[in-house]
Each structure stands twice: as structure tokens, then as C-alpha cells.
Image (cartoon, rainbow, N blue to C red; front, top):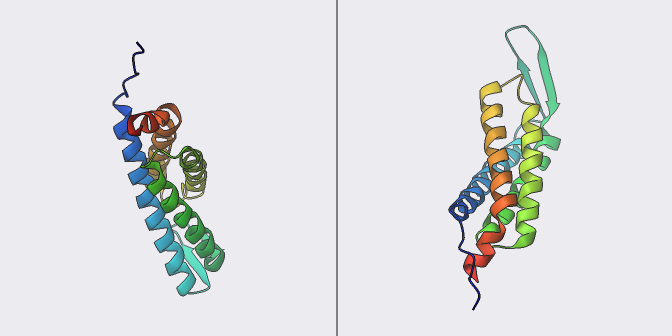
Length: 136
């Protein structure tokens, strides 16, 4: 007689991770789409009279592609796909690294998103296998 391991409470956190990846993907894809249909470049002058300039078209394509991948991976986390866990970790890492670029402009938002991405990475890497066990 074998004793089946019972899933921990972290299985719910995998659902949280999937939801966060889905929402982040939706927001990223929306930002990318708007950047593609908007002006060609983005200018911003802050209080110290520093000028920020970047190409909105490249930013738009990047966000659109990453956003669509995040939506697909987030939806696949719900069914316990192993590849979705790997992709979710990679995309959450890319998102966290990308937020480092936003620290000078929006520090609180960047730190919050980095923290959420780290929580998603932890939930998916440590407890992701429990979703598949629970579904089986």
C-alpha cells in the first residue's frame, strides 16, 4: 500500500502565478499594441530636465510578443503543463529584469512588480509539480 503525497497549499499559489502571468501578459500586449499604433518615438522630460527618448515601435513589438507568450504560458499553468512552468519562470525573470530599467522613472511600481515576479518564480519552481499531481 503506497501513501499518495498530498499537495500543499502552494497549489493555490500556482493559480495565483497563472493569474498574474495572464494579467501581466494582457497588460504587456495592450501596451505593445498601443505603442505600435501610436507615434514612432516617445519623449519624456523629468524634473531635472533630463530627456528620455526611445523607439516606441521596437518597444511595442517586444511587449506584444512577450505579452502573448505570457498569456499562453499563464493559461497553460492551470493545466499543469511542465513546459508552461519553464516558460513562466523565464518570462517572469525577463519581466523582473525589464523592470530594472524603469526604476529611475517609476521606482515603487518597478519594485512591486519585481517582488511579484520573484513570488511567481518561487511558486512555480518549488511547488509547480504539485499541480500535475493534483490533476492526475
